[in-house]
Length: 402
Image 1 (cartoon, rainbow, N blue to C red):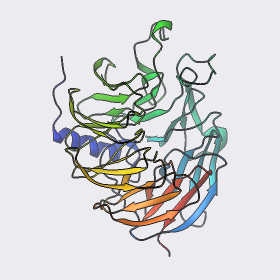
Image 2 (tube, helix red, strand yellow; image 1 turned 30 degrees about the vertical axis):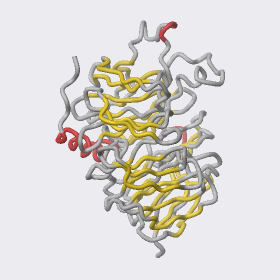
Image 3 (cartoon, rainbow, N blue to C red; image 1 turned 90 degrees about the vertical axis):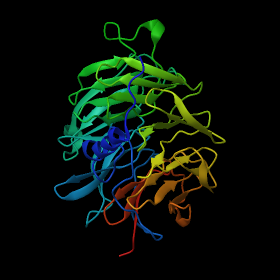
Image 4 (cartoon, rainbow, N blue to C red; image 1 turned 120 degrees about the vertical axis):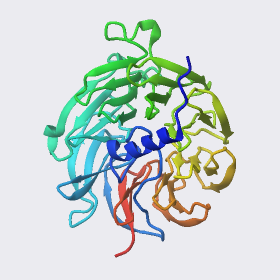
């Protein structure tokens, strides 16, 4: 039986909870619906670089902003397996506090839960719970290995099957929804609630090995969990039980993370270069075709305007109906997700080494050359400051000149 359609009011509730139950007002996509615009404001005019710190390897993940004892710190992982906290402002701005070697490449953005506790996974098939106020190994509250890939270190899809890349997304009750070999629901203490597909004696049957899920799960206000997988489907589960509700066939890897719009539709991109707008019952509302893969999540404005990036180098502005409003062509692949601030401006980096700011009408307000590919999405800090990583291993802060 198809689930009952969600209402726009449900979607609004999801958006609001995403700002409070997830990663706070500065970075909103750790919340259940991954929806809406950030409440924070970015720079209007071309900013100056405030600081830069070398983290030694590609910074793909989006920084997570956490206030500790009145001071703001940006936490992020690298492809070298390093997880660090960098002071955002004040006399210590740009200095590294927490510095952990987690032992495996980190793609995912850390999610902030109660405590506070940061949750982040790596390509050593492990999910970590980290105390952001601690230092050294004592900061690791717990770690949990996911999947049955201990003996698998071959390259390709099988070697990456259990990598903990998808999320975690934090539900309103604090539980974690994580993509790896399928999808897990875990308690804040790391206890398994359920796994999809269902496990037999704690393990996936040998003939039913779950495909890798790089996409971050999205939780709707009425209890559906949506995600894409490398099995070629967008899947909806009952978030409480893990029971499958429906699957939409894409026939390509779905590595992009979905977002829920103000109209309660799920918007998600795939490696076939399409954006799919799906109703809560799993039926297709519309699809949009770009020229290459779409592996980022979409930006969504409060009025439902959509912003999507593609490996074709373009940033697309789409109406809620799927019609193109405008296109920004950059000089390189775009893997980063566009971020919409509280006044509707869009911020996005490209592999043409530039960080862009655009008005809602598509006017380029400014573009800064950072000298390296930018696959990380920006985090917006107070004082109209942007924190962003790059492929040269640098974490940078950009903001207005004092």
